[in-house]
Image 1 (cartoon, rainbow, N blue to C red):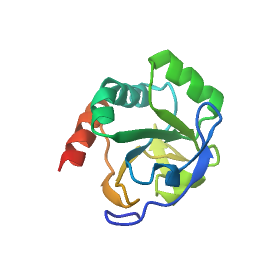
Image 2: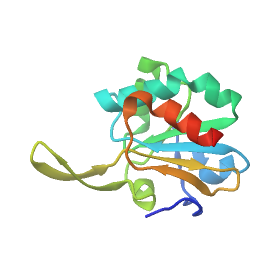
Image 3: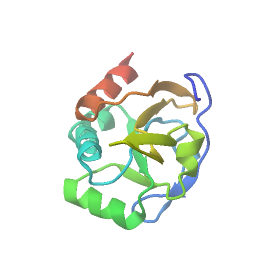
Image 4: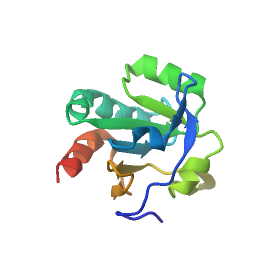
Length: 152
């Protein structure tokens, strides 16, 4: 389990447009890396829209927003267009990044057990260290909670 003060695990993947993205691309910047289960589902849409609605505040504060799920590029493109998401959505189709961050594991829904992505958010500082981990995320007002944590 990753803790505050740990080095954020390195990764390289693609964004919704198919461009290569790695965590080291953001060295020197503050980053919100938020894991979410699936594009265009109720909770994930609420969470993405909360970040969208606060996007200007994040931009003004110099904070880069990165959403990541196991969806592919086409799904991310459709999701971003449908909800006018201005921030980067990253692909993790083999859930390798989610595993590195402890965001992939057993889940239960309606009596069924399965493997999937857990909703978690990591605040990463300019040096690549984890400043804060949000284990329990409430999608509706998460963006404001994250902004407040960066201000502390």
